[in-house]
Length: 245
Length: 85
Ligand SMILES: NC(=O)c1ccc[n+]([C@@H]2O[C@H](COP(=O)([O-])OP(=O)(O)OC[C@H]3O[C@@H](n4cnc5c(N)ncnc54)[C@H](OP(=O)(O)O)[C@@H]3O)[C@@H](O)[C@H]2O)c1
View 1 (cartoon, rainbow over the protein chains, first blue to last red):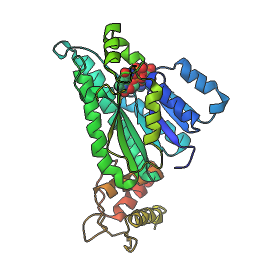
View 2 (view 1 turned 60 degrees about the vertical axis):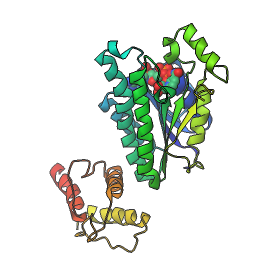
View 3 (view 1 turned 180 degrees about the vertical axis):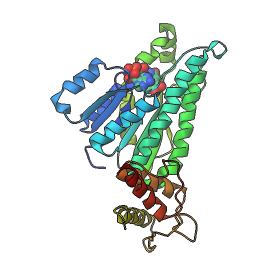
């Protein structure tokens, strides 16, 4: 894996994904990302001559297998091999299970778990054919400790961590590492569901005394996908300002 | 001999080389699995399927077939070409 690497970051149009995309672009890598809608961040990357030939965006609903596959095929048509996959796209639906709609369960499971597995399978096959790679799954501390109102979301993240461990064993001999990052609460749209009282309580309980920024996670992603770090695999790295310590 | 034969033999040979089995000669009649044949395990089979797809755009395993010999793989591509000719 020599620079520039080809990196796929799902859901890179805003929030954490946007921070991760920016981090890889700053490092000189080629970055492909997708989301259901285009944002100002995406338009700015597309228009920036510094990223010409190094940035690819496709509108795609990852939960739709055909759209997900079409996105992957576009990336391979453009850059042949994938060196790094960051499974970031995710959705949280907050609600007490006893009142939770089946539709919300499906939305959360279809994207966080099924779409991630579907894309990862295709990328792993590409990595088999091209000599290895790095995979990072963006998980959550809610998959490690329970949070009321987030049981379904937490279940998908715990499942993702299980996927990380199993896959790491399966593909380790083929120079592919697979790790999870269990992120704490970030200042992104996803945490807008929490009211000020809840956010202040989280901050009070966090040793680092603040919510996380996408950059806090992007730096850890960059560490895990470093070509030199081929002895870290199958792990769940918790990055939460110490909240769950 | 068709055009796929040498390419597929090379792909399988390189796959075995990566698993330190460079002394195995790949013949068309060789069975892919089992001690009597090339002895591919499930991961190597997955790898072979991925490499074939990368090279040719489709692969017999992905198409739901279970090729047993190197010749079966060659036949898959030769048949596909004949069908589209
Ligand atoms: N925010 C937190 O506090 C927090 C904490 C722990 C873990 N995480 C994890 O971090 C990841 C990113 O979260 P975030 O906070 O950045 O969320 P976000 O601000 O809601 O952004 C989600 C991104 O994913 C895209 N996306 C959503 N549904 C999609 C779909 N069906 N197909 C393709 N793209 C889709 C969104 O674009 P579109 O909506 O346009 O499709 C957007 O780019 C998620 O896996 C989340 O579980 C977040």
